Image (cartoon, rainbow, N blue to C red; front, top):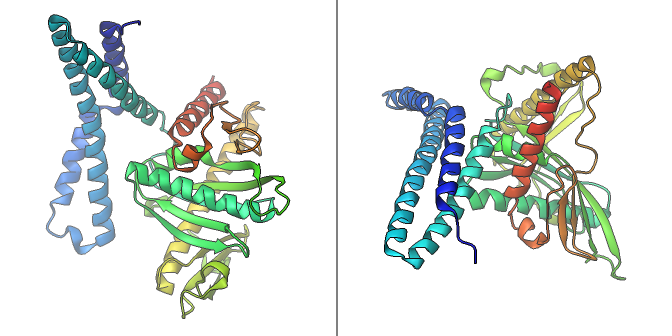
Length: 372
């Protein structure tokens, strides 16, 4: 059995950590923490709860980022000490422990390394994700619900706060559409690579003849709007309808007209919100998501204009970006990155980090090719 070359592995870890530190800039993070700590200690901080929440959230996230970088350095030092002691005492159990710790450090370092690739204009934002059932009838609606659970389980695995903002239930089963927020920094950067058309192939549980069915669902990811973005929407461009919230099968879950449907007349973009009990709260949430979608649309229009000026770059997301195959074999494959796994159950249970990482690296490669 081959033994691990720990000195070489530790040198490689230190080299990678240096690259991460060069991008993360611990000194700048410390300065940011000092500034946010000063703001957080202001006696009138909570006079403006929204502003206070942003300050405390930013402080927590920045401190966590610095801790992760510093902690990795300490873990590498501890690993080196453990290996030296194990070699001196010829301790096989300690070497096995060192192997396990090496695997853990590599995993955490890879996650940090991916974070350094998230340098887009809105990558550091929280995310608003909308899933819509596509072609495939009731199977597509069921698939949309499976995807919603997948993303919520992913957020839960990481301890990320996520909340469903709107759901539109299909008649027989599943969802016509659902919108949810992931309220953690860099949620947009990570989840934006999930945008596109997802395909499911399986034996339909809704087909009496047990035939194989292909169904589709669309995933849209937008960055959460901030007041500084200045996406102003004139009242004359917005149509607002109110209605009663409802549950599966049309069952009423609210006896007042608190749900809000907001339509942006020039673009036809429609946003519905029903998770809050107050019409005012739902209207505010709908406006925020509408502004986020318009912000992303503006960004895409600017990118398209730049692409036209630069000429055709032969790389695009395409209409179908991932296939989930349950029959006749078991596989989930990303058609852009070629990353695939043979355990769809784990993927649908939220184990999608490898797909996110592959997508982020793939996108960064496209950006580098476009800039060269």
